Image (cartoon, rainbow, N blue to C red):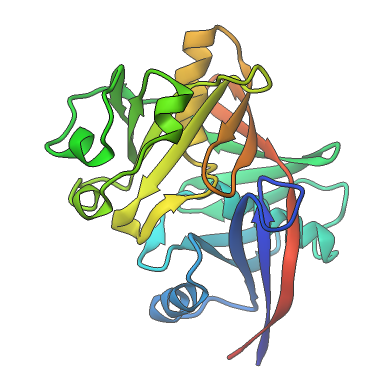
Length: 263
């Protein structure tokens, strides 16, 4: 059986920027080891698998090494594929059932907006080796359900980082978010995201980290609508709107590969 397979660049409107995700549409769920093998073969930061149900879609995410509990860019990529391919109606909201509960995607003009749970951080002590592996001094350190958050003094410091990933992989956490105020008035803040324990040294654009960053910067800047830039080599723009316990993440996507997975 041939299974529809797409590669989508998310949080960008131009090919070869943003964060690439594979999206595979299945008629029914396959064994976890098969899903993990496909994700390893794709070798992207995330592969999304979708199964259509009467009231929406089941959605699971896999890195090359493990299943993920929450992923923004692969959810954005999935919604884009479903609308572009006519699987979901252009004017309807898409409902995803995931390990992080029900997530919704809707269109907002040319953007796709994801309705995600807010994941606020709490102040925390740096675990042994974290700052040494990052090679930075921290203004603030916090931790949420998934990640450590490290605020640094400036965008220049953030962009100049060259982490030691062999040391960073020893930090027992999904990922490390590093952030600062933006030096460009176009954006409210910038960030980078490292997840070597998941097989991803640096993720190009990370939707789920903005569920933490949105809360962090909303409190500090006194505003509920923010525009963020993730300063990886590929780069990408994430619009963040914070409402109560929800983070609404906005962005665009483009399909760069369309084909079939031979099962």
